[in-house]
Image (cartoon, rainbow, N blue to C red; front, side, top):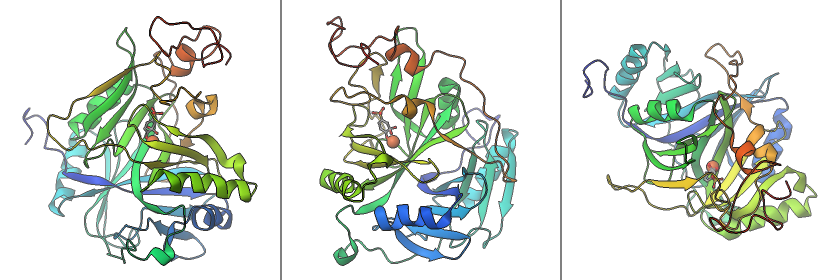
Length: 355
Ligand SMILES: O=C1C=CC(S(=O)(=O)O)=CC1(O)O
Ligand SMILES: [Fe+2]
């Protein structure tokens, strides 16, 4: 039992492991994720494609499933031992959540799965047993110049980030960074189980919705190559934001939109957060360098658009509007305010003066 004996201890989550996306045109999505981005096909048929990064040894990091309504069907987390599935089941039942336990075979390449619709409305899955597949770390003949090596994180849109943060921290996630204002409103926060900046993050907005899934490369030049390749393919309209250097996480980044509009981040070189006393980094929502260290603007679609999520029966979960102030409103636009140097000039061409 956890400290407050009222609730069972949370499951011991190792890492974010896979995302299931429903896509409207499986062939178009396969071309985007395999031919353009270079993810590796573990297994595929006419209904589903199971993909992974070059360094991954579990069966998949991404499932593309053909369906009528583009949405996110599952956020998969690996737990440290099969017994943690019992804990997951007890923990979420004690929260009053819908919990289903699916025998091995429910999900290809994965053993028993506990599926929940969590308190924020998201479809979370927990698993341990998984089929191992070849790690292609040293198969450089298969590494394109864009070389995506692993799944790094999810990003979830929810109306109340403070409430969501409390839920994730009770679940055992460590908050590593956040964006707040002087009134104490939290606009976004990042949460880790592995020793990088995050396994998932909460972005304040209408939700529950899936903001993005991020895959990691080893180097910035892998990201720059993906941009150059998209230029050569005349597909630069899939580039939504970046390339650039984040303030939060310090990672180099690129955001793309897939054929259904699902957002994919390509991400590299954040920092180690594994010590128990890892210090929280808090950013001022008006700091122009918080989301892009070079002060480049965040396009409004990045704040406003995200993918629906499905409940455990495959139905879209209703979306609730955010009640607290929204980041886009307080930083960009006629009454938006953002600075490069606190108290410095707000005039000029940077964000907050022309968008
Ligand atoms: O992974 C991330 C790290 C940093 C940022 S931000 O735009 O720098 O806040 C966004 C993000 O959540 O995608
Ligand atoms: Fe991200």
